[in-house]
Image (cartoon, rainbow, N blue to C red):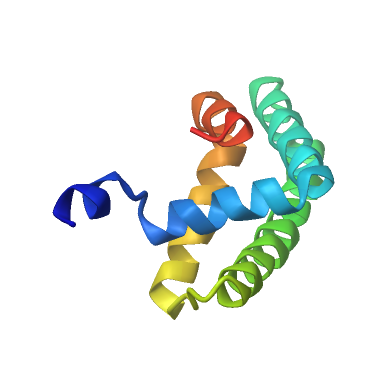
Length: 107
């Protein structure tokens, strides 16, 4: 029983992955936004960063709510703290190419 529990990902990671699997088109758009944000940051494009950051805030909020709904439908409602952890996970996906790759491939 302990071994099985040890293999389970944290609830926030599970919910973020459930979102990726359940909404592949939205996940792909989200990954594209992350790439655009990283490129704007690297290119020091202040105007692009401002617009993309606004999109990021909207999309992270929207996707975290969707993840919470999917988790609830699967019988695992998320607490407010776990939903914030989902948002943190999604923010990491946007800013860190390795996190984006891990999320995109389900790791």
